[in-house]
Amino acid sequence: MSKRFFQICAEALEIPIESLDAASTAADFASWDSLSHWDMISAVEDEYDIEFSLEEVSAFKCLGDILESLKVKGAPLG
Image (cartoon, rainbow, N blue to C red; front, top):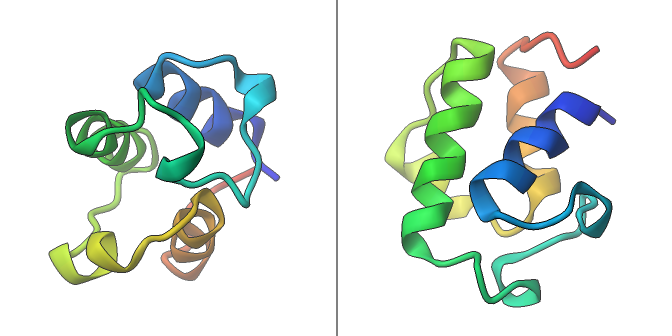
């Protein structure tokens, strides 16, 4: 798994990186609201120089879904 990816998510959600894993969902954290979700998506897009479609973002249910989409798009996850 990409430590940088989880670091980006933790910063956007304002939670400790240790609290996150691929199964993490918005229901797990009070700070993960619609605004922080879009902040996180934007930060991930900027970091990996990719764009998600609205349909993709709407389908994301957990951080693992985002990671899988990054892999499909060829993002360098390290």
